[in-house]
Length: 230
Ligand SMILES: *Cc1c(COP(=O)(O)O)cnc(C)c1O
Image (cartoon, rainbow, N blue to C red):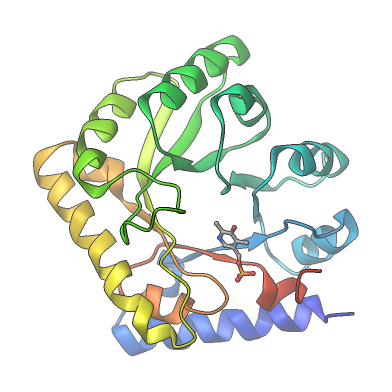
């Protein structure tokens, strides 16, 4: 069994160190515990150890877990690819979506949110590397999607998210994180007001220190908290 409380302490220390190394305030970095495949009891343990943001990737799994953990007052982030036909579950159960990637999905989410009388924070997932197998919108199209999302009353645009290619050496991910930050700066000058793009969701277990050095405000960490996924 992984020692969840100790793991969280270690990660908080690493976040502090990474922030100190680049002159940032650790309060600017939100740690999201990624709980895909993790049992509700382990999520509760992480919550008791101070994690209040959790990320899920699969609608089916997340529905059961969010409901099982209804007594835990956590913020739920949907971080997996979302098909339009599952938008209603995210509209109903989640606080933040990291993977907005089309106008069609934005419109459907907005419609479902209106029905639920809710709002949802959204980040646009950008495919910075251009890998074919990866979700996310092309950098060139992110500006117009941001304009569209910001026009929908029940979506609260708040930033950008990316997943770099996998590298054994985390330094190699840094250019992809830097590219997301530059894209954000360009979009904030051209497409939408900068405060709608304040969040940069980037960095996971293997590379969150590099992401922090490049300006991450949300890091998504699973393995380093909950152990290897089966
Ligand atoms: C699974 C997942 C993570 C967490 O990955 P770890 O390497 O276990 O920290 C982060 N972001 C996304 C989008 C994921 O699917």
